[in-house]
Length: 261
Image: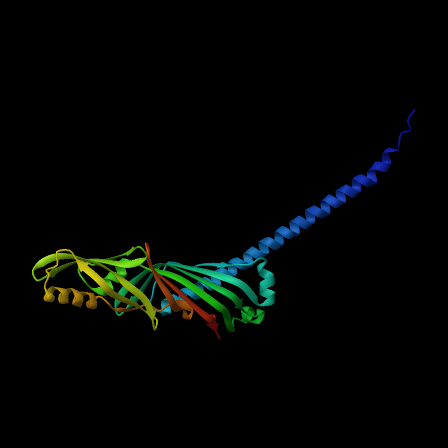
């Protein structure tokens, strides 16, 4: 007959299991609370940065939808203690600026600030600078707002095979024509240079005067377009015609995100 072990020997094992489970549950609860606290701190920081961006946009005589800010990196609180943040993403939509009195529409401007430095004392006191080692921006200028700057009735701009294409009605020597062509787009001194060197018009009279008038039209719409002031001291580096508009790429280094003293 097999020996029966006393029931009380199993109780310590059960108590040990219960203590282990309780300890694991406690750790999970504490971890959850830390995550919640971390995310709450991120939300506070994002709202504060959004307010700063909103003020910058207003100072530049521009308007936009409320900025959307996302502070990257996890956990956030360790970044606060270190005084350095991996990256901060800012999205501005429906940006409306003015160039020489004319409105320029930028449907979306994406800004990515990398290696942002801000001491804990700066965050506590609100005094000092929050500086990003590098800021990259990418925005789109609509073709409609660009066409208004050229000030030619009926003129339309669009992207065609990676180039800026133009279509416009014209009256040359009493003949109504449609002008077509493309432009070279470059950046110079913070301005977008448009050079329409390749225009044609079907039915253009084969006369020197008609060709001169077409060349003068091309010269008249070949202008330097000053862009509206971009936030965070962004400098335009590249411009590319895209289906959605003229895409502008800009960057800057050692940029103050805020300068509160």
